[in-house]
Amino acid sequence: MSTGTDLLADAAADQAVPVTRVDWRPPMDGTAADLATVATDPLRRAANERALAAMLDVTATLVDVAPASEVLGLAPGEFLHAGPPITWERASGPLRGALMGGAVLEGLVTDPEDAVALFASGSAVSLEPCHHRGAVGPMAGVVTPGMWMFVIEDAATGRRTCCSLNEGLGKVLRYGAYGPEVIERLRWMGDVLGPLLRGAVRARRDAGEPVDVTGVLTQMLQMGDEAHNRNRAGTLMLLRDLGPDLVATAAAAGVPSSDVAAALRFVGGNDHFFLNLAMPACKLALDAARDVEGSTMVVAMARNGTDFGIQVSGTGDEWFTGPAQLADGLFLGDYGPDDANPDIGDSAITETAGIGGFAMATAPAIVRFVGGTVPDALATTRRMREITLGESRRWTVPVLEFAGVPSGIDVTRVCRTGILPQINTGMAGRVAGVGQVGAGLVTPPAGIFPQALARLAERTVLRRGAAA
Image (cartoon, rainbow, N blue to C red; front, side, top):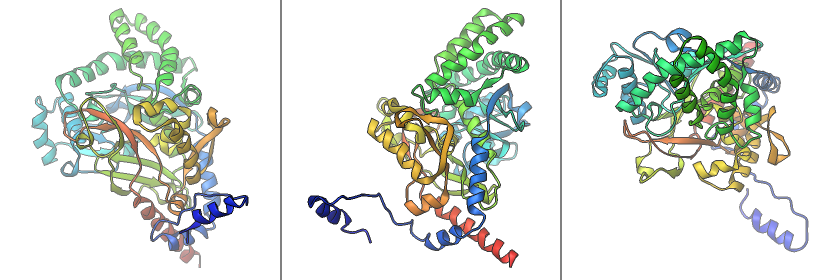
């Protein structure tokens, strides 16, 4: 019973009695029995310690840039997308727009509108989540065989993850735009930018000095970035690391200086460029925490524009899904809430790893992009500690006395407190072809966490039965 507690506290304080206030909330409806079952699981504590340690121990390095056909084995007609599995019939406007543009990019159609019948029939194309191929994709997350990908590697284990190159903001494929300027930019990225980056990345790798993406993330959090919607410092550090090798390898290969200048100008003018390195670095770390029996730690949060899904370490590859939510934030130009699609993208992998919305206290300036206030940003990072298993040793928050960012979302803590993970996100137009309409803050649908908790409780009971 919590009714009247504030009145009681106020009355006590008025009489000079010391009062400690706590933000107590009842568990989510219908979760009490499952919480009790999971709480008594003898594997849980050690499993969560193991999963969290595995995530925090990963060091991500940039080792290659290459086409998706090469590094992911994508065949003609195979398309990847953000979020949990979905069919064309249920796909949102921005996802449809990105798939239509991707079909033009791959030469499957010449008119984007002709791609509608192609995907509706499903006879010559297939859709699969990026997460199922060891990759992540921002916003619509569409990856085609010809797109060039960053390849991230864990130096200790050799495990790898991938992500496409970042196009910038506005009318871009990942926001569902597919006009001629979008396709032209993507073709330039495949013909010029990708090969130039490959030369520079391989030169550093072969010299034994690959770009330390985890290290860059550590530094950028000290420099006002939170690595989801603010990546300015990270992008400039990447340009510093790769610039000399890009120029040198391009000169050795006889690449025109105009191409080199265009590539450097594109990366330097795209503050979000580093996001597509932060995302696979976070996935690489979280993938190390997968499949730990008894662990209640979330290892993926992803959205396809229709559904929001999570995966949990102790439940394998199963997705727990609910309806994607509309973000609350700031809009571009004359756009408003009616123009926005529900939340979309794999970029919530950053929050899953403890940065992005969880690290908003490192980047108070982010509120000018996604809304809210500086005190809100500080409060968000503090609040996320209530639903996580620990904190990072590497990624710290200067304004909070260099405490580590909240790390390891715990399903049981979410269900027990009712506090939902905070995500800051871009907003895509709900109509295919529009592009970006704004940016804001969003949380997952609450019901997916009780779903995951129920499955964890079920597995706990089954294990007990098997041991009896």
